[in-house]
Length: 149
Image 1: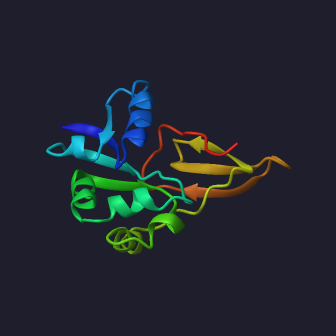
Image 2: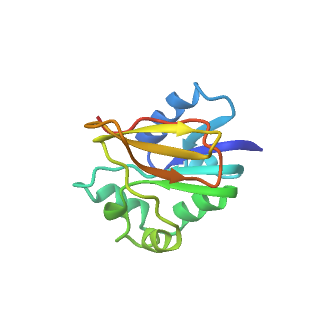
Image 3: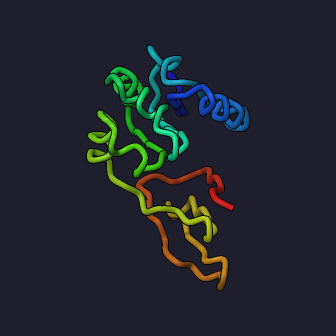
């Protein structure tokens, strides 16, 4: 069994995940379809899609199968990364959006510093370099990926 599985509904997303997975031993990446029959302690579902183009989301939400396969791969934890506004109005994904807790939105105007020992990520304001807020986690984050900018 894989420790961490990062999957996406679209080939373009899966290709990006596969490229990044080479740097992280134990991380397996692919499409939701290639994950069928596999399980992992942690599954990261990366939705992806252009918010201005609903066709891909329409396809992904046309049947429950894709989402069922994605969420049922996780043995312990499921993390979903995507544009909440773009996905939460579509069938099946709307129920997912209501069911999962929401993390505070990240800002491209801020930096994020991982404190794995304390199990938190500090959000730093670029303008005055003060801690704007601290985001607690119930796990010790070991990797942090920059977003924005």
